[in-house]
Amino acid sequence: MRFCFTERFLPLAIAIKKARRINELPPYIFTEIDRKKREAIARGVDLIDLGVGDPDIPTPAPVVEKLVEAASKPVNHRYPNSAGMIEFRQAVAAWYGRRFGVKLDAASEVVSLIGSKEGIANMAVAFVDPGETVLVSTPCYPVYHIGTVFNGGKNYFLPLTKQNRFLPDLDAIPADVARQAKMLWINYPNNPTAAVAEKDFFTRVVEFAERHNIIVCHDAAYTEMGFDGYRPMSFLEVDGAREVGIEFHSLSKTFNMTGWRVGMAVGNKELVAGLAQVKSNVDSGIFQGVQEAAIEALRLGDAIIEPSRKVFQERRDILVDGLRAAGFECEKPRATFYVWVSVPKGLTSAEFATRVLEQAGVVITPGNGFGAPGEGYVRFTLCVDKLRLKEVTDRIQRVKI
Ligand SMILES: *Cc1c(COP(=O)(O)O)cnc(C)c1O
View (cartoon, rainbow, N blue to C red):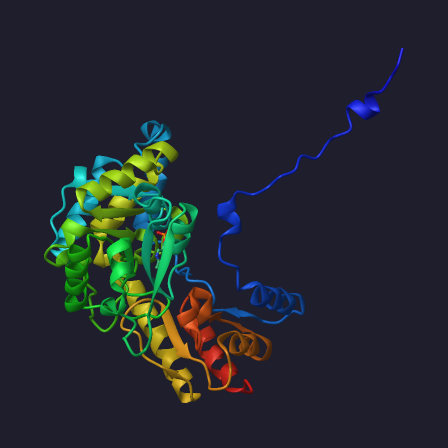
């Protein structure tokens, strides 16, 4: 008799190789800042984090109460529909009608998303074939171009600069690129630059899309975060937009609901249907309790948005006034909870962000982390209370440039 189980049962490691698409992801450029942040925390520094765009204000109470009530209904414990409850899609359509004067058919022009990030990423699954070109305005929310990479497409970046008022220069796109392009990503009010777009820009986008047969994807996550009475518009308000485009929206920033994962895509029927088709194959929708709460949020609308708008506006004034008094150059944003600040001459974005972290204990994001044209800027968020923001402006004056 021979016993050889030590050999037989020795666990053998298999060779694990990630898919090529993972290796093709852009390098993560925040490694250095992340490390310095952890070191500062370990040293006991009283860190103020203006890095993440995630509201610190709680979700309005009536929305939370709706979830509590909806959570106990057994009908909500079963699989939801991946495209969203018709009641949720009707609430979205009604809100678009009230807010933007845009009429939507709930059944065919609205699809629910597990947060808009999910829909943005799945848009390329539905519409981009390997080798196809996607136009991406940048600096930007990274999911637009990562979606392209995950599906074998090619990104062509359109720089957003101070000279073009952070609106992509469509006339500067080479003719052959425009001819090949399948899709275009735009985002206004913009993260990270806080720029806004008006009707003339959206009209030019529609003309460009019609001329070159390009799908327009507009990320409208920040339309409800306008200040001083400014109300950003929907891309779908422009004539012809529904023939060429889809708009991504979310309850995350509007209602301080980032953790809830609920958003929507609206617009062109074929685009909505394509996205819904992908989703029905990979997810099973949003918990119906969350959808019921989202319906309540959309129904209450401005009544529950206005209080947080006021809070962010006051914070914006404190930070921008303080930064300007300290000699920094920045515009007062008309929308979003971001402040896009020029880096002092002679420093890169990363060098400046590092000094602010090391000397002031304040975390901010180097602009080039959102794309190369963001070099020369840093992004501050407004997601801490006003006393802490005042503290930021005091501390930053002491940073040696
Ligand atoms: C926060 C954000 C989103 C996504 O939010 P979800 O929570 O996934 O809905 C989308 N686009 C931009 C530009 C954002 O800043």
